[in-house]
Length: 350
Ligand SMILES: [Fe+2]
Ligand SMILES: [Fe+2]
Image (cartoon, rainbow, N blue to C red; front, top):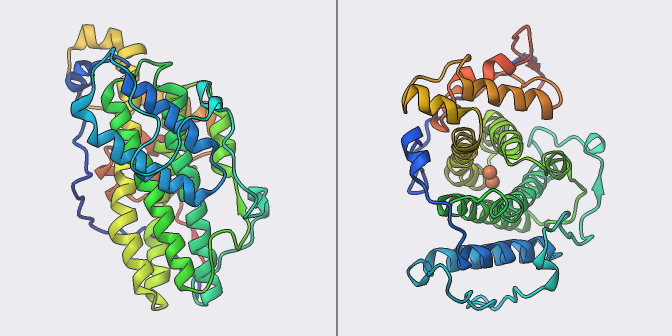
């Protein structure tokens, strides 16, 4: 049936992971010391990137999340670095982890193709189509996990990021790793497995283009690509629901969707932090103080638009999930000026 595609504005309950909105005053109050524990975290991030297996990457990610949040009380800046192994039994002593890892290692269990050559996923009406959708989502989650670690290992020390930055991106990596594991389990339940189908590395290709700029990485990956995920996820959830796969629909709606909102919020939070600490916002802080409503002509919003126009190829695609985007901290001023023009609703046979 040919009909209008519309964005479903599901109301989501944000759980304990919801992070509070960041104010300019809060941004300026964070500390920027690099502790021995943060340096060890960077080493672990690199070891995860160097691990070939996605499943083991996810297990190392969960292990490092536990380690990071459990050892907080033991931290002392200037003390000896914590041991390079933990209760998870993983070794984090790869000598290649002394330097920035430029490209992650991936085993060849899944055939990687050019993003433009991937097969159509279908509308979820057959088990093959539902497997294809789950496999595609699991692949995206595995790359999202790597991107979170890459942000830590590439920009954490280089940009003197504060402790809260590491907290947010360790949480983000752990969320993505868990999404990958849960979707892999759904694939197993459907008689398939992760790696059975071809994948693409489109997310990492775009990440390479922002490897020299933390601001651009935060904007393009977390505020554009992840926000696009919020726009389309309700339609994906409906595909599973409509065809009787309640379990996958529930996983996507109750676990993945609310957590993805917090990821967009983290991207926006740290973009603003850098804008007001190192960018044009420093002068604005002096002249305007700590308030002011964000409009399409605010300095921080126009800086965001400039980055999207520089690093993102093409315009943003409506329709937008305004409700989810608002929960992540985006008013339309952040994204509507970047949308395809003239604005029109898409038609679809789905
Ligand atoms: Fe995710
Ligand atoms: Fe995410």
